[in-house]
Image (cartoon, rainbow, N blue to C red; front, side, top):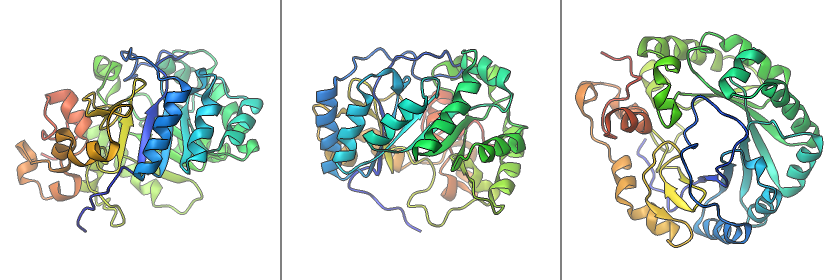
Length: 332
């Protein structure tokens, strides 16, 4: 299936603040010190992306609930016709806050939970009591009528606990469980020796995760790593192959700077001053991401046409080149 060149990204992942009440060991954004756009400017920019043809916006940060005007910002997005979602650590999300989010137009909220063991999650996230508060957030959101997902960053302390994480997600009524591949960006780069898996461990994890994904259950298990194409995980319904960054989605930083994704710190424009469709169509970095060239072991790999070298962000962080083979790849 040939890839489709969209006139605009389907989704914008939008960081609306840099502040956070956690100290996560893998955080990619704590070094961001850019100014935060005020609500009026943000709403104008949100309307701009809706007019450009974007379908959904996912708010992040930092911790977006630390912005007191989050409901106002979300309401702007909902009125513009966008599907509105958010990623949160859940610490500040009680029943009243969940009710406010529902009224503001949120259709889905993702909560970060990285272990079924409270002490392990709390240590990784740098906040005592955060595991319990995250579970309470899932309950509050469900009661408010907001769909939920759980986001889990796979690393050395949880990669052997797929069954337990699935059971946790099912117990608390999550619609989706997102197993995120570990990115070597920000603190993730500094702590990679402690947290990242070896290529062999990644293969072992994905073999089991794919087996669980294929089972009949109400929970959707989502795997966002292009390198699983070498295990026969070829989604014939997807519009693109390889990384989706710069093909289906873009990232916007707190000061309005546009980047291919949150893990690729290369600015391609600014949503306040630039035309989104022009950036999307012609930014040189985006064109490079859409037209990668195989190098190293990728050049002779039969799976390259499906995975396109794996995660572009990880290759860039570890080698300085989008086109380099994904460091997580287990192929010889």
